[in-house]
Image (cartoon, rainbow, N blue to C red; front, top):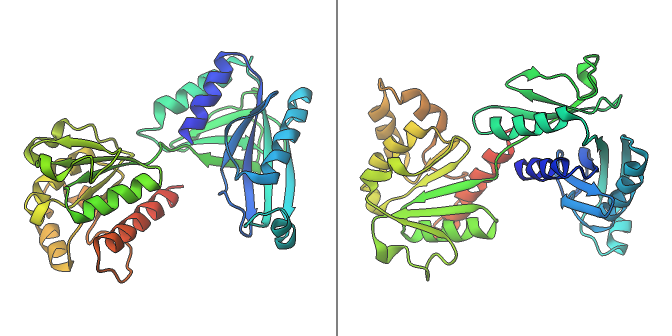
Length: 319
């Protein structure tokens, strides 16, 4: 979502008017989630998607009409299974789309977009619309709601729609073994930003990790790696020799998610290791050990699917 905010900021700087079309309600098997947004200029869809297909085309055309009128509104759309099949679509269901006209001449609009970009890393940040009355946009940061761009402070809480602004998923994998190879390539398939770190050059070759960022360094020196609070970390060093060393360094950076390959005995041992230390609370909040959702797995590829499932679940539950 932060990429949509950056695109919106670019349009505001260029003084190009646009409408933000956002899914505010979903029922059935519509392809995108509530909060999915696309930006539409007078030329049509500019950035983002609400799922593609005929509905996105229809929404884009309607957004252009509203742009000419400088209006915002909510519209319900429904695609039956039969209609979807006739259109060559897999998904049916219904959506409600909120069309928000963005006033690019309002200085507060740029101020809010800048504030979102500056705050997203270390705070809970939401873009806010009033669905009953067009008050422009507002933002909420750590529970504080800022005035709407129209200048009005009059609103009812139940009329507000809030969509959380998050950084795209970035995953760091420590270790270059079989599970790391399977996980890294699966994450790449999922269009995630992936970095693999190992201290053995021969284990993180381009052949095994094609097109994936690779860092070769001693595991005792990883403090210099820029891991942010919104990032995801998976630890699976060879023979688990360096897992505890990596974990201690990573915990200090407080990423959103830390997964460690291991069993229930390792989980008990590691929990005891961090008990009564400065890192105990962070360990209890962040660490998933054993890593992965609970499905029956044997092969590295199956374990990778389990890890990917847990990471996706963690990201989607961060609302």
